[in-house]
Length: 324
Image (cartoon, rainbow, N blue to C red; front, side, top):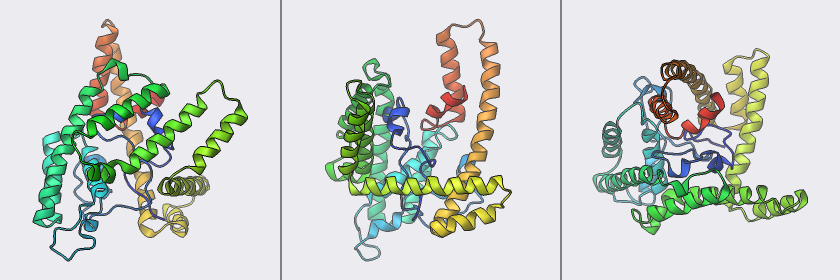
């Protein structure tokens, strides 16, 4: 079993609901845990693109882009892997400008792909960034606000409609097919859980029906997530008993392949870095609120939003509510 770096472990199938504007976020929202760790080749961990990427490897396995073809041939674009690579670097928004991030991605594409494939991937990158920019504008529409299931579904449908203006059917399925299945499954579960006309037994029956209809890939991801949670509970128990990180790695390696075990060690380090950022943010937030004591609520919210954008990506910001 293998894991992806793209998402913090344990977001669950309700992530689409918890990210109030996530479906219309300017930059990547959280993705479900993936079973295939994405590695695009030798990458130096000594010089991360941004500080938050220290000890991580870029997502997106560009080696698959020549599957079924001879070396140097055009091959088939692996749209999902490209999107993972794009999202990896775009998660640095706030630490680097879009222009700098774009140049970095273009450099990766030119360095790791044959010229003809790189040209197609560059085109897709330009479309993807423009699509993300348009999502930012859509996010301001008041009719799309709210955390209710109807608002969430409306945001999803609006996003899909916008997406169709940029990508053809093959590109859409390759880049977003799994995400769509994941989001629709989460919305179906929300609709059941929020339906006041259903009894507890009826909800269980309808959720069982959703489970039965779950696509195979999504079911596999869900089962993988359950294994991850179980193993991480064991890791916490070992850590509480004073076990070393090497001991924890060996325990994880019994369940996962070496890359996945190493990735979970990365997650541990990222959690430490996350807590440090939260501490700095809370300190700055407290100072700003004191300085803005006589400002209007709108002015305070604007200043706080700017602070959040400085420290956190769009995908991370929904998590801040737990710390405020």
